[in-house]
Length: 331
Image (tube, rainbow, N blue to C red; front, side, top):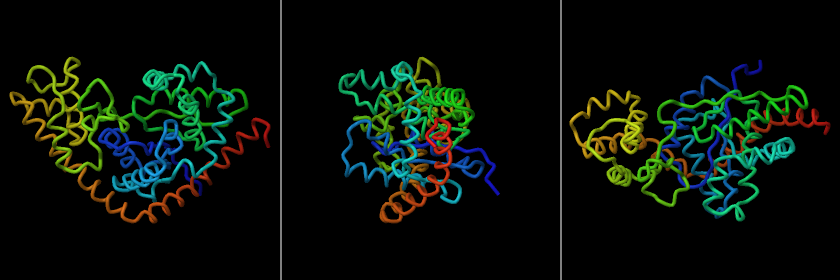
């Protein structure tokens, strides 16, 4: 009997260091939903190539992401875990979608504009410009109904929905138009040293993020040194972005409500709060870190799991790609 559950697709790039924002905004959510949906969780290694990568480091990071996926509790019995580059249907569908995507749509993508402004548009790769189309192909290839992503990816998801509707209008009903799935708490964790910026895997400032594989004392030091706002009140407010970010991390790690945490720390200082938060983060990440490091001791096993997942992903992807071919006259 065919699986009649709704499909979920999401992925993380194997560049930089997976951090607390990835854990709270994506990975915890994936684990929570894995038994309720038909899940495809990808390591999007092709997306990582949009900026230069050291090949040796990239290979290591691909395994590291796989190990963290498993360490947080993703179960290959309940989800398909695989590398994007091992399923060539992703790039084949991306070309078909390139032919209906519009230059103006891609040029308006905020992430491209931000990155090309920093590095210079002339030196930005075509891949960086075009990767929202590959992202759309990743999702539409599996006819995913739901896509759990961070708020910063909303614009790309809207493009995916636009391309699905456009393809369906031009060639007949082919793709599911996916819905975005965003958690209310912990979905957008900000940098510890710049609370106006999102916590980033590729940040050149290690103090800006807590990596999932950071040692406990490193985590304590980073949270102790996290910037705070003027005043001493521990309350979430628009004019207090730094403490608001730390409160959101506290709430997401403990599954408590922010007003309850504010009440607990009424009349207490930032020092007490940050000391307690550091221990909460250390304790929450410790089992993930320990399990991931164990898994990384056997890279062949991780590679085998990823290859097995790629085989399952190809089985799901191939019929959808062939349908798109046929609708466009390529059968």
